[in-house]
Length: 180
Image (tube, rainbow, N blue to C red):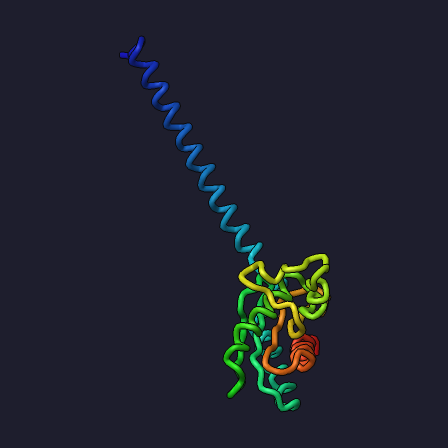
């Protein structure tokens, strides 16, 4: 015997809601799959310095510092300005640890040699006092962007402990080491 009236319409609406819920669940599942797949595809790959290249840059800079008979701290940051590699040469200044890291970060934040940035931060300069931002920037030589073979900036290196000229020269050797 077939039911009619109010009971059958409630049962119809109930199964209709159940079908809509199934569809919503399937759509949500597909969105999750799509997002997970997109995250895997969009993960940082070639736009970030590898740990091998970061170590290569640090070791080349260290070799240059040893040849110059100067004790320095050397920091390499990745494309996001996160510390990727660091070395403190024996007996180098403890205060230079933070300076080397900040030189590398500053260089990456602005994609410029820190010495060149420093020229713009002098009194009357177009970005005077910018070094007070970002938990402190360093705007004197020793920070150099690191570029890959395609010319894309993938990180930066910062050196501190010698004169500003020595720091810049050592950092430049490190930045260029990954191109060899």
